[in-house]
Image (cartoon, rainbow, N blue to C red; front, top):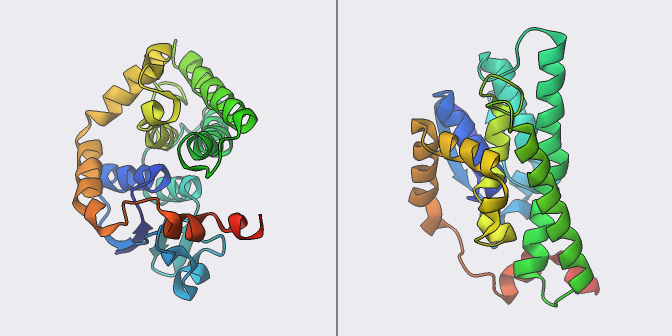
Length: 228
C-alpha cells in the first residue's frame, strides 16, 4: 500500500485527487507543517527539501507533487498523454507549466497577501500579477480545448485543479469572472466522484492540523525571519 505523507494544502490535494481517480489504496500520514513535522529526521530522510507531499510505494520514494502525479500515471498507465510525440510534448509542457509557474507564483501570492509579517507592496503586486498572468494563460489554453493537454483528462488537469481550488483566496472573490474557461474545467473536475472523495478526505483530516498561523507557526515555517 502507498504511504501518502500530506497536509491539506494545494500540492498534497493534487495527489489526493490522483490517488482517488486511480483507485489506488493508500495510507495517509499527517505532516503538520505548522508544527514542524516536515523537519523531523524521519521525514527529512524521505524528502531532503522538507515539504509535502511525499509517497512511499514499496521501495520507491517520490517527492514533489508533480513528480508524484507523473510517477503514478506511468505506474498505472492512467491519465497520461497519448502515444504520439506531439501529445506527450504538450502533456509534459503543461504539467511543467503548473509545476514551475502556477504553483510557485500562487504560493508566493498567498504568502505576501495573507501571511507576511509586514506589508511589502512591491512583492504583493508582483506576485498577484504573476499569479493572475498564469491563470490567464491557462484560461486561454482552455478556450478551444476541453483539457490542458488537449482532448483527454490527465494528471496535468489534476495539478491545475489543486491550485485552482484556491483562486478566490489567492486573487479575491471576484477573480473567477476573469477565467471562465478555467472555471468550467474546475467545476467539471470538482463534480467528479474522485474529487468529491478527495474533498471528503481533506475535511476528515482537517482537525489533525494546527489551524492558527500564529507566531509559533511562523517561526517554524518562515525560518528566514530568525536572521532578518
